[in-house]
Amino acid sequence: MYSNGVLAAETLTMMASSDADYVNLPNITFGCSSHYDNNRTGVVSLGGKKFSYCFLPYNQNASSSRIHFGDSAVVSGTRSLYTPLVLKPVSNSIIYVTLEYISVGDQSVFLPSIEKGNTIMDSGTTLTYLPTQAYILLLSVLKGAIDLAPVQDPSNNFDLCYEYGKDFNVPDLKFGFDGGDELLLGPLNTFVPVDENVTCAAFFGLNSVVGSIAQQNIKIGYDFDDMVVAFQPTDCAHDQ
Image (cartoon, rainbow, N blue to C red; front, side):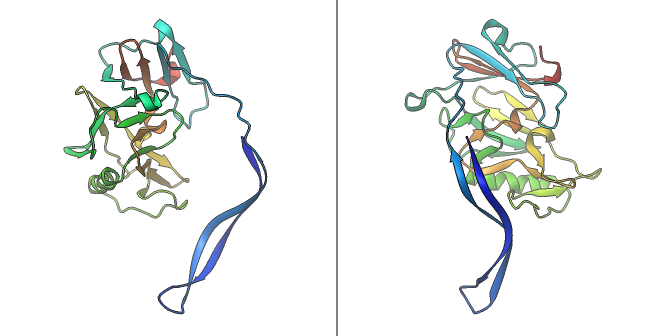
């Protein structure tokens, strides 16, 4: 699936609605597609029994991420965490879990709804999405925990960004799942660089989805026999 055409970025000048002044809007991206191909190579369905994967960090190209099936996909051990896997009749191809809260230090942001299966586990979504109310609260808590002034995102995509260097310390986040286990997420899972000097919180406000950035260097197993999702912090470059 692809599109060919012309893409441009310009400064648009528009008249303000409140008075006769003009307002400049820089770096507005727009384009025109001259050819669009919607043919997909295919979709691989992995539901049914057991599978697991371990995503390498997005900036690591030395090896490939691995996926396992069957008994070799079982994620176990003292460092493993578990939460119930939830399937819904109207969308049984989507894997749901129940995310109850996200904590930063001693402060917790609870999701507005903690009904069973309130969050999607999606390897095909890059960022992590939270309900708008929880998203706004999380950004506020992060601002209070990071002792630096936020900066503007040069890409105009993210809401919370910082210049990163020796003084930039990102607090660990914990995802609290149904069942009582907490998954620890470090800077690799919660911030994404947008240029050489700026990194941004890898979250958006919308629905509740755990994306692939949050899943890096975590071996994640899906067991449809026991209906559980397992998490095990791992150096995925050495996953066998």
